[in-house]
Amino acid sequence: MPKDVTPAADDTAPETKSVTFRKPSPEDGSEIFELIRECKPLDENSMYCNLIQADHFSDTCVVAEVDGEILGWISGHMIPNEDAFFVWQVAVSPRARGLGLGKRMLRELIDRDECAEARHLKTTITKSNDASWGLFRSFARSIGGDIEDEPHFESDVHFDGSAPTEHMVSISIPRTRDTLRVVA
Image 1 (tube, rainbow, N blue to C red):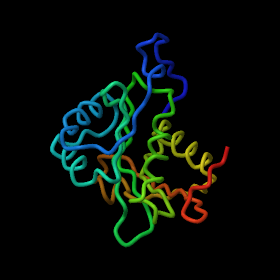
Image 2 (image 1 turned 90 degrees about the vertical axis):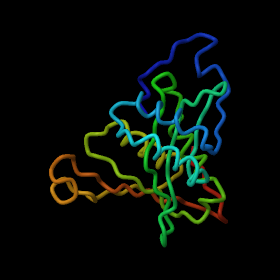
Image 3 (image 1 turned 180 degrees about the vertical axis):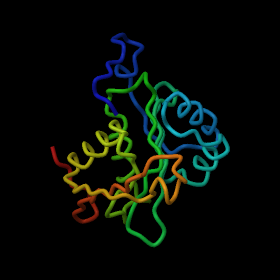
Image 4 (image 1 turned 60 degrees about the vertical axis):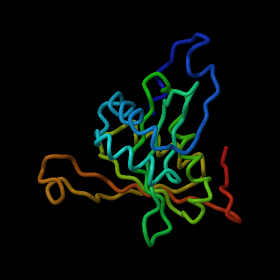
């Protein structure tokens, strides 16, 4: 997420309060849906989709909240028959940008037991999405992982020319004795 966004400096601003990271519950579905709507230009899925993610995929999704308000969300899943964790969507409220929540939520997810077998983090990003590229490059550096990308869902082949090509980004997750190696 962009580091040039500075939240308001007062004692009610999110950066002055404790952030809690937790697995979502079905009751969070509508609040997650509203968070995504507030984070343009993210693709808005249906509220039902967010409800299913929070219910069926809670072990591989995370919410970041301050005083009970959800200010961050990542949806993801382990890719079947691969040693890879796929990040579907990252949303950080404009009120909480610049706090490193995106990177902190990614770390929370790959440190979970449910993702212990993941040797790669994968996501798709369009070439024009500078904020996402910045987040995932920064995350790769912070864990000492290598990052690669290649066209995956192509504009003309998969989207009938109605959306830009999505590049599959793959970040290696260095693990030693199943513990993530932290790089300063």
